[in-house]
Image (cartoon, rainbow, N blue to C red):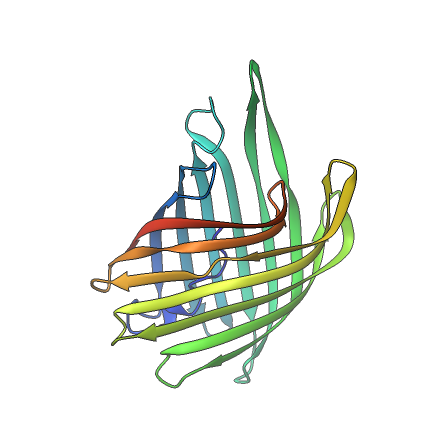
Length: 230
């Protein structure tokens, strides 16, 4: 899933201060081979900024036509001062479908509510930057008190023709795999984009995940992607 990975990309000369984009990825990971679309929006204002994205998977479950998984996040950074520290509040949630022979059904991705602080540093020309977040995480029906640490970065190179962006999340969550319960989840999605112009980019990402999305242990899944910035 994409997650704040281009939060600062929107501040660069490549896209402008206010931007929305649409991405289409082909997941080339082992045993995967499906498409994912992403819609993102970032809007700053005098009290902070609002960000959201919506992911949809197509064909990730055999015999399920159309959207097999839908997931979205919305986040708000809030501050009334010039310091690089802000309050951060966020919601995550979604649902998916499953199929096993003639049996079919749906499942919910547990709603999660996060609140904490974030600290951001950027180069004066916004060619590179980093945001660090520390948050309390409430996972509905699972954990009343958990936590999440997040890092988001961006680097623009070759006169903004090449952009390296990404995020890394590490959080506390019990995940059941057979008779074993793991305690922590790690997810990172670095992306590399070649920007033909301010609107059209080609590239992809490499998802690295530990105990995530029903897969025990560490898995690596690359994608190939197209992006259009409105």
